[in-house]
Length: 213
Image 1 (cartoon, rainbow, N blue to C red):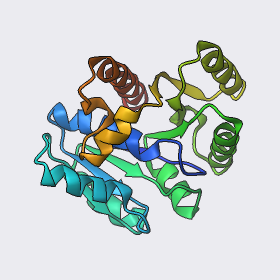
Image 2 (tube, rainbow, N blue to C red; image 1 turned 180 degrees about the vertical axis):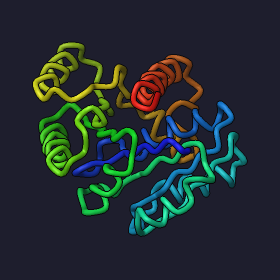
Image 3 (cartoon, one colour; image 1 turned 120 degrees about the vertical axis):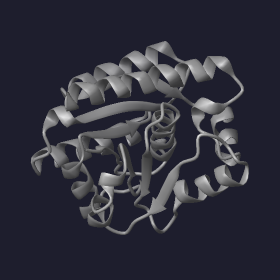
Image 4 (tube, rainbow, N blue to C red; image 1 turned 120 degrees about the horizontal axis):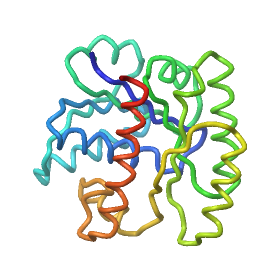
């Protein structure tokens, strides 16, 4: 039975696709058969990124396909160990379908109120439609270097009572360069950044285990 993880957002620019590709690739590196379901057919961000990955022959290889409906994905999940949904950069009916189908629903957010508040509203909307609260989790993405700001963001999210995945994806030019090369944020040449990505991935793995075992 495949584990299903949805990475969704109310708005663009919060690092959704970067996060989705990061942890899915690490599962593939562990020998899992994985699929990234790119649900944003208008932009196909992850699908086009994987074309670069294939062009540069980067291991591990991934299955990344575009889908118009969640039902189309669910018909083939039995062929995989892990399926991650890279949702569209805005909340839609499909976003709700993804959330109801998944074992874990991840909402990436930056540190600004313009990122935080839409994602918190989305979390509330998903909960109101019947998604169990424990399945909803926030990940801090594109975070600056200020420890004071980080603590303020954690405190702000803490008032929501949703789970916050330990670790963060920092804002880094190296990550954008990695994307242009068909790589994930964890595949840069900088060991410090790789270590931070590995810590975040492990936290996501741990949360998935808690929810599925």
